[in-house]
Length: 368
Ligand SMILES: Cc1ncc(COP(=O)(O)O)c(C=O)c1O
Picture (cartoon, rainbow, N blue to C red):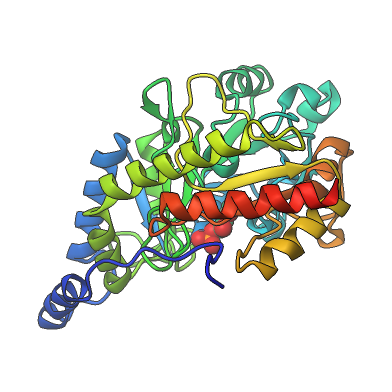
């Protein structure tokens, strides 16, 4: 494909090799090594957050957040969450024995609309698990208000929200916990990796113990833990990529702006509306068609032209039997059937965006 849907950002080979050589010299490969400590500190500074804990991936980040906040099968927990997300949002809940109950989304922002949750659901729930979909901040003020009223924990799956700001501050500052995925395809990555940002230091300290089997300072497993540690090799990649983060974020924002300028006038397409006070972080480029039929035809035409696209997120998680199918979510079901993500990666050029948009617009015209 001339234009893949994503292309992981790679630093210079010799920059990574130099860090790996230092790891070989130290022979300290994992368990809170120097690269991990440095990456945690630099990321916390860059994102302007406190209590940031690195973990092995974004799915474990969610599981660690739930366990740390005592949302578990043991407490017969049910969480209100969005059906418009990647499988991991729901599967991490199910894996922990927490029942996901799906609440419909806002048709413009594609984020959970907590006003769609009934009093009965809010009274039964233990937590709200929102997703800042495609990096777009959730309505955090409203969610916080509802959560406070009903004594619910709030966890944000912020897998897409690296460098996403709300009113000039990182959106990761919101929630009892916010989780990142640092997977190779993400805006910032460490090959595989994740992070949890906790509101409270006590939760951060508990999670630090939890990701290392629950061991205390005497190496005694004080409570049930898991192995969710990030290795030095992964942290070294994170450090290399972080050196380029200004270029990555500013360039991807330019790409998103160009896509928006070219596609906004196209009547047959709907673009995601950004939450007031939030700005597009250039993580993804979703477009919504008028029908699934149009989507499938355009997707085939783009593929023939060398443009790879992805039905992200399809199907709606509320239609997946394995996740329990609790909740009535017609808006999310409809958008899931009609949404397509276009290529978005740091190596993409503005000319590339122009070419992709030309192919897309031509395909739409051919269908008229
Ligand atoms: C919304 C969302 N949550 C969680 C994850 C899981 O992250 P990871 O692949 O690092 O486990 C992803 C991955 O793409 C995601 O898109």
